[in-house]
Length: 194
Image 1 (tube, rainbow, N blue to C red):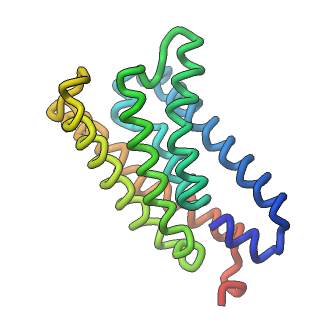
Image 2 (image 1 turned 90 degrees about the vertical axis):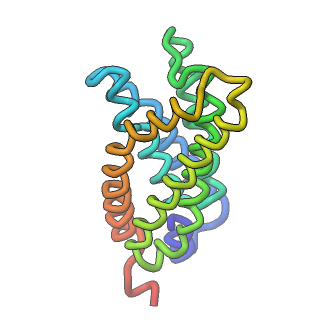
């Protein structure tokens, strides 16, 4: 969607890359900060329930498209892990990190597939987010099932966490499209799409 808005404004390639880089960096920063706020306010169970890192990643996919969104999805848990490790409490923990990187990469890549449709009609953000959530959580569960001999996680444990996080996912399935629709109104004028 951001690419469509920049195309309409005839921004040169250098400015497009700079803008996408700044938006990506902002979303990654938000992916680090939001979980910290939720954990301070609600403790670790609040993070498992509300899944605050997922919100900026889904926004990134819908806004930036598959390639740039994928970078946001991969880097968000990694940057969070590196920063919070330096503070003595790694989030996500090292054992969970590769699974979260894979899951959030899928979240961003799948929601990013819809960016062109979202530029045409903001309501496409709803199926984009829901499909991304289903695919990402499915990939996480499948990856744990495939690697359970090498990890402390079991499919049953992850299924329980998926159920716990369903409230956060449901909220995000409403909140992310509302944010994307609002951003679309700011970035793309309907008359310019015709």
